[in-house]
Image (cartoon, rainbow, N blue to C red; front, side):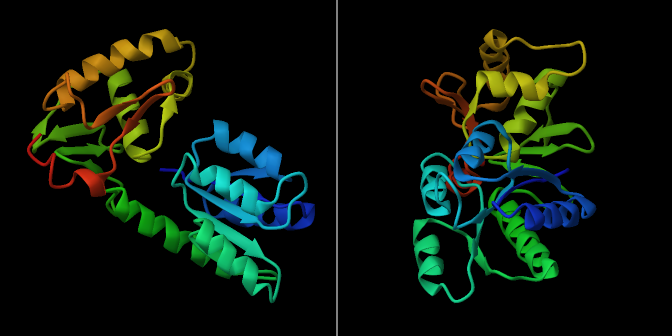
Amino acid sequence: MEETVLLVDDDAALLEVMSIVLSSEGYRVVTAADGVEALREIGREGLDLVVLDVMLPRLSGFEVLKKIRQKSNVPVVMLTAKGQSVDKVVGLELGADDYITKPFDTKELLARIRAILRRFARQEGRSEDGVLRLGPLELDPGGYTVTKNGEPLELTPTEFKILALLMRRPGRAFTRTQISEAVSTGSHYLASRYIDVHISRLRAKVERDPKEPYIIQTVPSVGYRAARPAANASSTRNA
C-alpha cells in the first residue's frame, strides 16, 4: 500500500531533493512551499505523514502544526534550524512526533519516517503484512477479504473500498465528497449523496448494533470516520 508524505519547505532545492529520495523509496509525495499551501494540501489529501519546516512564509510551521492537531493525528516530523533547541521543545509540546535538525542526511530522514510509520501502523491495527484490524474486523487489501470475528463478510466492491479507506486512517474524519472521490474509478463515479446509503448497508454488516454504530462513526456536519483500535480493542472484540 503506497504511503503518502507531504513535504513542506520554502527551500525549493531541498524540497526537490527530499521529493526525489522519497519517491525513489516508493512513497507518494505531495509538496507545499508555505504554511497556507500546506493547510490546503492537508485538507484534501489522504496523508500518512507530514514533514514540516518551522520557518515558513505566510504561516509558520508551528501555526500549521496547531491547526493539524485540531483535526488530525497524522504523524508530523518537524524540520528545525541547527541549534534551535527551543523550536524542538515547542514543536514537541504542540504535538510533533519527531524532529530533525538542518542540515541533515537524507538517510536519517528516511530512517525517521520509516520508524514513525511503523509505530503508527501498529497503533492503527495494521500488521506487517498490511492487514487492517479494527475490533472484530480484519481487512486484507491484497486478498480483498474482510472477516468479522473470523467469519468472512460479503461486501460489494464499493463497500469494501469505503471500509478500507476508513480503516486505513482510523480516527480521521472523511467528508462524503472525499469518500466519493476515493472510491470512484474510471467511468464509474459515485455521487456523494449516495454515500449515506452505502454506509448504512455497510454498518448492517459490520456493526453489532447498526442503530448505535461504533466501528463506523458519524462526524456531525462533516462525514464519517472509523473508530481508533486502541480505544475499541476491549469493548468491540465481540461486536
